[in-house]
Image 1 (cartoon, one colour):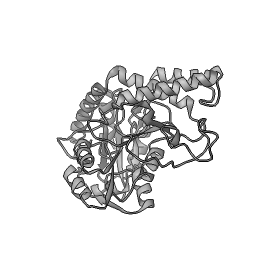
Image 2 (cartoon, rainbow, N blue to C red):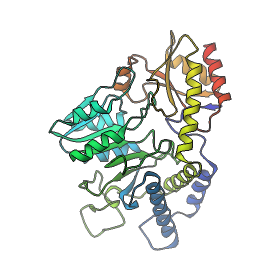
Image 3 (tube, rainbow, N blue to C red):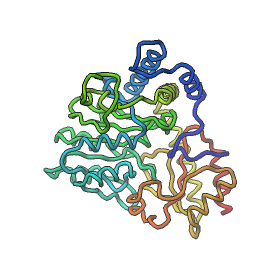
Image 4 (cartoon, one colour):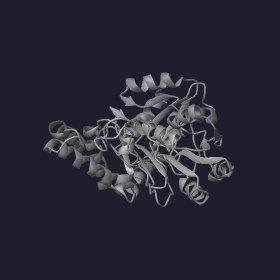
Length: 367
């Protein structure tokens, strides 16, 4: 099997992640709900995971990190905190678009036909006096392009506009510094490039944002109150936490740190460049995205005369895992002109090889 669907979820997980899952099953109690050793073990693991995340994203205080189910959960929390009009882009995942659409009062900045988002376009839209927040992705899950969020964050910081970043596709494979990039709120998932289990994610908020819990319930703290705690991270961690998953996330982050995000990004970039060069030698294949910009390992293509589902089925029969369709990003496909059928998406990571890519190219030539 050749796995190229890492933008959906990473595979394989490092052995340390599997070991952490077993250890948690054998040792975990309910964190914050007791003083016995199993509850204490869980609380310690969760505290350590917050520290790992804070170090990875240059967050000064680990308490500013709350755990969630996934990036979608985090983004719903984040949008719930917004005031005024929201500025977003046409390259967003539905995890951004749907919460914003349900809330109302938003402006969508249209990307170029190749999926490129000019920071100046976003800044121009955010100059409207009614804008209270900019919500956007760090990297497209359709083209893989990495956007210049640092420039946008700097503008938002000067204007007092809330800057919310969807790091589902970049957390763990692209360097992120919330201080340098002026990110007020970072939403990330745990099961992609951070190599944790599915069902894990998190949200970072700086200390200037007014708290507004999305869910309310048990927290293990302030239990004598009928209102939800207004302090981080308790305000966003209603109910029993996914201790087992968070333990695997902690180990996944340690694995990423052991290699180095810069090294992971470089390896993925080199593999992607190798892949794209060979794809463009096949006359009937179109590769989407702009040249000479920074990318993650995501590549979207279409094959002339073939439905993406037909291509995906053929590749699956030959042991190749990829994704076909719209990738939960309908406006991105409208931008690229692929709104009728979507694309075939390959998403590689640093574990893939040139030999695997050569085999995929061979199969694409056959179809």
